[in-house]
Image (cartoon, rainbow, N blue to C red; front, side, top):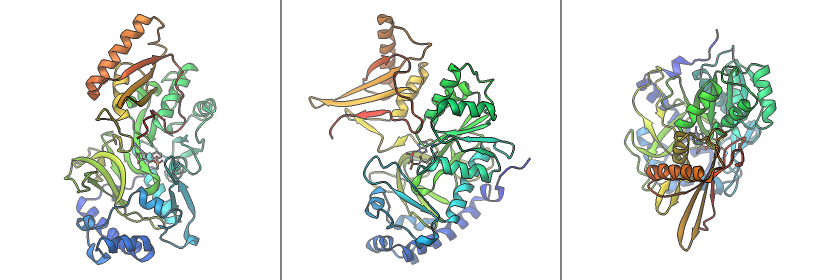
Length: 433
Ligand code: DLL
């Protein structure tokens, strides 16, 4: 049985890997310096030239790049190859300000496909598998990214895109899809819908899921695994660095291996921007080592997480990253306390609820108000006021001990909070700050 496993690259000794990274880094720095005037200017302002960069030890001399740099150079000010060499673009949804446009040469697409094929293989995918890609196709990178990876891994690919939930289920059942790729919130919705249609975990042909593009908790993973009867694997990435597949989970399911022969990771203090020692929690910063059209050096992702320096039991030597807690952008500061939606999700699932909730924050008389609307599952549902109040109190206490602040919990009837086919929108922040 054919399996796409690049053992020579994925399991190479750290010594060899560092050597490869250093060689690629030196080349990449020259590439941006010579082809992107914006970068050259930024490096000159920081007093650094390509001659100063000999290895990853010298990374700290390079200036950071952030979303602001991408906005300043919209639409093609960071393009590092002639336009004739570009074969595709992708773009972010652009909820805040201008969209980010990322460019790809054919080599960039091949590298990206390779990263996603590694993810599918690590989730147990072989040429025997049927992969249903239910991430959105189009400008979003989820659909075409996993699609390319599935082809490269030799799987039969169903290019579903997102939406049309009942048709998704028909194809999973009729074509015996074995691997599902979509956001975790959409996977939870598909599981709910399949359950309503009378399909239990033993009837569903799926064996694995590759879920990412948004923060999700371990508790949500367990719920999805139980309801679909699968193993659920995390996958991470961002448009600015290709898309999905920057990092992926292996069978150990203990953090995501960063494709370190293509991406160099650092953790920095988000306030001082100083690099932090191995194992510390901080902001994840990536340098793409071999992207041609849209290379990024020291790109600040805003994602908060920890790198895991210990070796993995699966034999892959590439460093792992923990599940990001969320973006520093998504972190709410409520009455001075840091709150991540994923912490709320953990409490809800531990109390037997599903991840159908909404956080509503406002400011009244200079004080933050904090409400969590939680949907009752059909099993938990009751319209007895005393029982509802008791359940609300239980959740309020659970949230207080997790977050350290009090939330107003409102339980609502099943199916009253909108489901998401892509990334879930959990927070409504009405504060004008
Ligand atoms: O979400 C790419 C992707 C598609 C990844 C499909 C995985 C699967 P963007 O829309 O540019 O790209 O959003 C990138 O999403 O900075 C994280 O904040 C968040 N994110 C992505 N994967 C994960 C994950 C795609 N596994 C932003 N866990 C990133 C937590 C994630 N957050």
